[in-house]
Length: 316
Image (cartoon, rainbow, N blue to C red):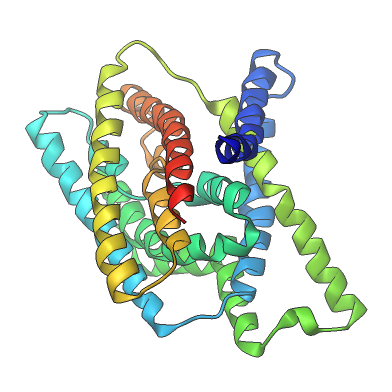
């Protein structure tokens, strides 16, 4: 009972901040433009700071490539299954398959995992996230562009991948990790830079939660379709997460159980929030379906994560 209360007390601030975001919208305290600027701060500054520090402290092993391959393949398989489900359910929304693949780790996953398991373990989720990051940049974005009649340019996709602050921070972090333990550096200037990055990284969780709460809007009209898609997605991904944890994380790599929790955490997350960005603005009905699905996914993901940590932590 004591462990349950302690765990819930860690997740409660996340829920309260999301509620605060919804309150700020209702009260019209801040506008949509402010939330957009919050997101820019997250994607371009605070999240890259978090990932840089995370990867700078990580010791990489060649065996981690198995995790990368497994997650990437799952994303591909889920996109294909989404296409099959679209045909079977005779769904008219051409973007329907996209909501089955990829995960919103950046805007949601890192904050949830870190608040319970601490920043020292975030690198485990970051390692698992690499496969789906590559998938989103090179496969999902290309897929969405083709749906809108635009030919995917390999050069453009590669440049956008390389120029991404998130990717740059990961590359720089990995580079630093190979140079040795930066924590032993005694230079006041270097220490000040890392302390600044640490302070910026701590801003990530509250800003993300407020932004999520602000944009969390569920249209009860026609909720059945998005709810069904979300449940199907979660069931399929939980099954795949179990298989990867047992076969790859446990038997093949013999990694600790917090890696398993990290994988479950990511596979429970909503689809990438970038999907609506690549949709045709004229297709309002299709876009509303996707936005409704994302909102429902956020709520179910939070509930599922709470269940996960309550059950998973007891086995650690």
